[in-house]
Image 1: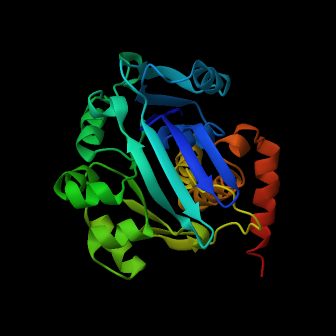
Image 2: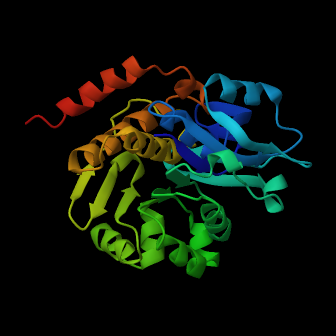
Amino acid sequence: MSIVVMGTVALDSVKTPHGLKKDLLGGSATHFSMSAGMFTTVHLAAVVGEDFPQKHMDFLKRKKIVLTSLYREKGCTFRWEGEYKHNDLNTACTLNTELGVITRCVPRLDESQQHIKNVFLANYDPDIQDRFLKSMRNAQFVGMDTMNLWIKTKRASLKRLLKKVQVFILNDAEARDLTQELNLLKAAKCLCSYGPRMVIIKKGEHGGIFYSRRLIFALPAYPLEVVVDPTGAGDTFAGGVMGYLAKAPRINDKSLIQALAYGTILSSFNVEAFGLSRTAALTKSQIEQRMRTFRRFFQF
């Protein structure tokens, strides 16, 4: 089945030890769509400004992402500028943020798409995430992401929204911040008590943890010699997980483990080049080849 993602489509400027790139196509919804689109049809809901390059719009169309609910509004596109230091590629130092049209224009879904059952609420103001979810008429499997800003400024709204969500994906720092638990297993258990059936805690280069009341497991990250740009890796991971589950005949222990493995593999490709350069050219055969290698790690 297809999936709807609501989030940002942005222009990113990124500096890493491997160089500097300006005005790259980025944003949470974009990175999510690129990986989820490997498994299913993705309907993208976001707003961009008048300055959003047509070449980026054409690129998304070529990738078969449904752009019916990608609206161009008066004003400037959301822009993010960040830097990764050579001694800590897990953490981005934000140099500048220009919110642009997202301060006054809320993502909305075309009526023809409101019946879609699978939904992912990428990082956004939780009040806007909630409003968007309420516009869905038949949402049955809902995933979401968040960030420390919303944990600090909109904790109550975030916890209300979590009661409506099946899958909550966040990183280790966010999990600890939201629950005040240092132990990640305890943090995941606490997060499930807020409402989600499943919690996935991302740990960057150290992989991730899956927690539900009936299944707990952890996967390592795929080992890489060179990491060029980690921007969007978490969104790419989420897209792989949710995209795989959207096309799976049923959600069970096997499909959940497979989903996290595919999310891990897709995010490993994402970090090998700036922006979408690596995932844009990615083929299913390349994904499966790396997946076969990943599986061999667990044969002992």
